Amino acid sequence: MISEFPVGTKPEAYNFPRRNRIISGLSLGVLVVEAPEKSGALITATAAAEQGREVFAVPGNIFNPLGMGANRLIQDGAKLAATVDDVLEELNLAQVTHETRKTTIEIAPESDDERHIMALLSIEPMHVDEIARNSSMPIAKVTSTLTILELKGLARMVGHMQYSLTPQR
Image: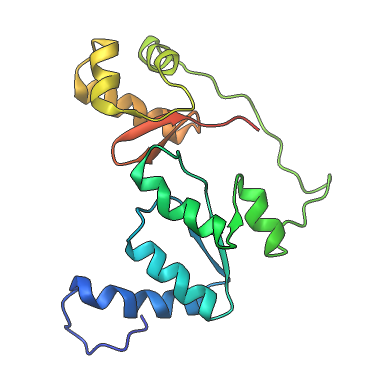
């Protein structure tokens, strides 16, 4: 562990920018997925840029306040990260040849619950409460099914308790 704070220092919010400056300095780059216009993620991205690190941002919905910070970073010169390959290529980590590509298999929903929730999801985020309402399933069943779909790579959490389909490549 690396820190400029003495052992036993409590994780106070005002220490996060100093801690994240160290983290960004040790990294090849910083990826901001979701951030309001004033957030710790933007402080970390600024520190990374000042340290000569790459800054990436996933574009957010223009109507969602949590997407505005990442969108502003892109306007200010951060590299748009639409896929993992965008990041890997920029950092020269995407040296994949035909011989080294992984064989992929199609993963499909296995249960009626999985199929039902998959039918409700789209690329637009949906809150877990709305999924439960629309599916008429108990919230515990919805969240456990969403976790299974996430592990299979079929759905993803894209915000606080918001899910969408995973984009197919």
